[in-house]
Image (cartoon, rainbow, N blue to C red; front, side, top):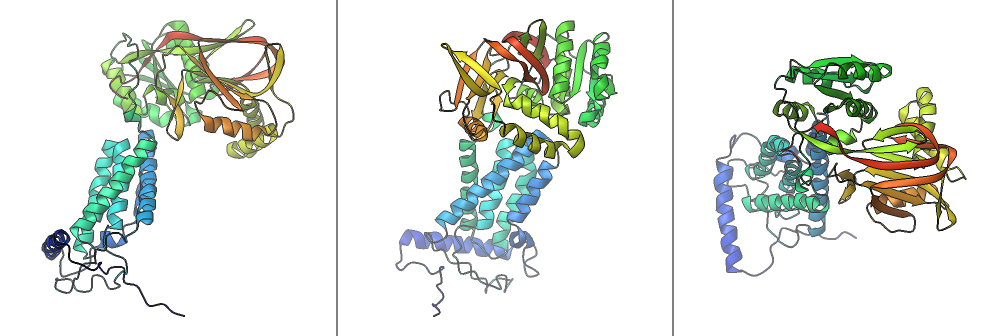
Amino acid sequence: MKTPDLDLATTKPGHPPLRDRALALDHRLFETLASRWPGAGTAPSRPGRSAGAVLWCAAAAALAASRTPRARRAATRGLASLGVAAAALGAVGKRPVRHPRPATGRLPLPGWLRRRPVTTSFPSGHAVSAAAFATGVALESPAWGAVVAPVAASVAVSRVGAGAHFPSDVLAGAALGAGAALAVRGLVPTRGQVTPPARPLAEVPALPEGEGLVLVANTSSGSAERARALRDALPRAEVVLCAPADVTAELEKAAGRARVLGVCGGDGTVNTAARVALRCGLPLAVLPGGTLNHFAYDLGVEDVRDLARALRQGDAVRVDVGRYSCGGRHGVFLNTCSLGVYPELVRERERWSHRIGGWPAGVLAAVRVLRADRHPLEAEFRGRTHPLWLLFAGNGTYHRMGLAPGRRLDLADGRLDVRVVHGGRRPAARLLAAALAGPLTRSPVHAAVQVGRLRLDRVAPGTLLAYDGEVTEVEGRVTLEKLPEALTVYRPVTDY
């Protein structure tokens, strides 16, 4: 049995004076704008009709294609804001305010709305999505926001010119979209929201044209293009491109003739450069060129522009360095050091990556390691031995930003951020629970503490230790400690 169509655009009975005056003003403003809209009397306004989720997804893809962390974060935040705005619009719907669609018969463009929607006009869904995406992008990156804003404004305003919405519909939609973006920021703060504590500044030479900088770039990480871009920005800098096997030797040579030692590569390459810089007493300039680049990004150096500005102005800070000791062997780490499941996963992945590729090797390694029956670590506490799946020590405290992954705000806090995942059945579930727990210090599977030094005794022979992506074997007594403010690194001090 068919039910009669329901016209949701029908206003509620009654004549509230305030509502009637507002509607009359809105109608007059619409007629004025629509009649003077560019191209009136020729064709419908295309942006308003075609714009939607597809447009903003394409815009997000274009931002992400720029390959800069700021642009990727802006694209992600824009899409998240768009999703929240769509959910809010779907939950509220158009029923509470039954504002009818504009009547276009008296205007120069009859037939704009060839298929009249049955929903009400308030608010404009196109304005909601445009404002949500543009505001989300702008909150993360004002520069990219300035690029997106004119397109978003055109999409929203064109709904009036197309005869689809009244001005009040567009304004309300824009307010709803912007509010959704602000709600996302409240849940997941932007980097600019969290002001890092003052770091110890360092006296370093300013290199206006790069003279005195020798930068070694690991070509296997795809960093050659970025290294050349830095040389274009600082024409008197020396850039050395080399294969992974030659990185250590080239860094040693560069340290002998450089005022500033530079490195471009992933975290493992940066770790090698830090060892050389520490031994030679040189300031370090880090240009991110790998996949993750945790140290550079937490430092505040995301691209060539950041590093070039710091070198020109002579801006640098002193940061902590982590160190592990086992017997007579020592090593440093700038990011993390871990024992247990993760080092075994890295070793297993390296065993298979040259045969089947990186991502498949990672999946295979995870399956093989997490299916193992034995616990890779044991800890003695109050005379009892406890099995462990993972012990993680970060060089500096990692903070969770809402639902976003952790990052370090202070690289000179003097602390090791130690996280432990207790042993038991189902290691995958326990590791996932620990990851979701974030900075929580107490949970059935997870514990966390911040210390300056940690000693591990009776470590079984052949136990793997991973530091900044590299893996080595340890046994007996293993000591993890901090070297406070040991390394001087260039960074734009005025940035977040």
